[in-house]
Length: 279
Image (cartoon, rainbow, N blue to C red; front, top):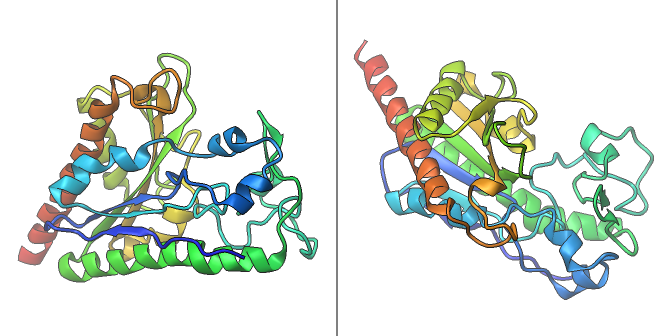
């Protein structure tokens, strides 16, 4: 049934209480997945966030911690809840109401895309789903939880930046969508400061529309406990070449943005913590 690699964990090497999450950068497909791909590898690649893991390099070099998922999103999506399943992708499931993402074919295991249609020759069975949950989905979230808990213990507050890319958008629309689930996954000042930093670096920014945040920020963001989580959706045309697979002229600019968000928000959290401790 196969064995999947563990998430790649970059331990924090600085005092800033920030963690990066990169759930959709995996691009190496096992033979069984490729053999079951009805439309070939290119259709599976359409689910990836290309090179997002490489965009994090400046922040990681600064000492920011990160958890990176090396398993492709087509195998299982770590930005979905465990019960967000689509019977078209998994056989033997009891009928149940579908969530909005699963209804459009983008559940825990994607079944189709608008561009390519059905992704699989045949659905996977429940045992294979449980294997992917045990080896991919749960270890990823466990690694995030452990890293955030350690940051919270040391600093009293912690921030998760969940990094994604979005399809190219029309000119003059936002290049970065910051999602805080309308204030449910992070305090309002966190998202507001993130938007200010991004705009100061020349990026057009929107909040929560059309991406308010998925299962990762929903699960790990608990602002009342000092754990804040933002989802970052970056326009691929801002950092990729026209082939939408390789680095383009804006690559270093976007890498610098992620570094600036991690360092700026992390320092602000430290400053607020110091002020509160002194009061």
